[in-house]
Image (cartoon, helix red, strand yellow):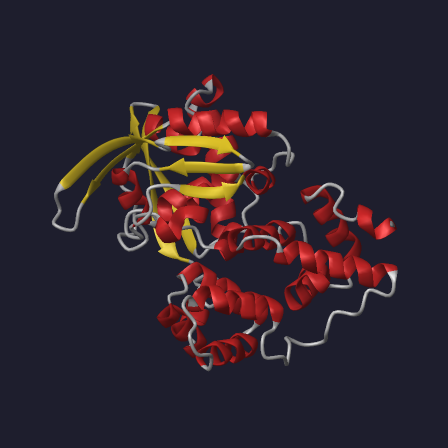
Length: 353
């Protein structure tokens, strides 16, 4: 989640920030569990990332870096940074495939996600190449477990379930092969091919949006890739287009991105995005108005994280209704209220006044 939050400015900004309570909830902690968050950040700063790969000229490059060069919590904000060398690697899609959000939401196992992440960048070569079992255990996050020193246990509990989920869930199919010395397994590799059953799905996390004219207009204004995709997904292309037209027609706008953000939130120029939010004349209407205010009070990164976090709790008709109507989804009204009460304790106390 830290990498996802920082990705757009990974190589242009030395420091990155995210709301600490949002981060806690995104990674499954209680929103006020800062002690556990501190332990996790400490662990990232103490964990070494190592790479050993071939560059485009076929020359071998080895490197090592801590996963985070530093992290701090201050005023409810988590600030962190990557080393320059690691940031370059993480930002290069040929070296590190940024996990597609649509695919990421499908995984239920962290081991399967780790396997997908480490295999996907080799999809063009068709194989990961041979990994020693010690390296594979580190990639799966079980290097410190004596239980998984046994290949029998590693295969039964990690490899087989992870391979099954990757092949069922993602846009690639992986097949493990092992190398033995006598009867002992010493190395493993994964053959990789595209999954034909999922190739037709929209798994590119925004390519369709990026091909649209309104996305190009937003980028020309100086809107970041991530924010442009979020605005289009949140408001719809027609509404965003109207607001871009409105901003273009105003004289003396010094900061078009900030002005456009305000125009989207406050509906400058009228017309709206659809049915207006009902006047707060009933308890439900007041609740909807409060939720709308809470959403608008969040930063773009927080709003994106909030939606993804809430969507991860839904399936079937409930998920479909939320994707159509967002936070105004009537089918999810109680769940939405509970979510915001969890995220912002006391958020609805004023409703009882």
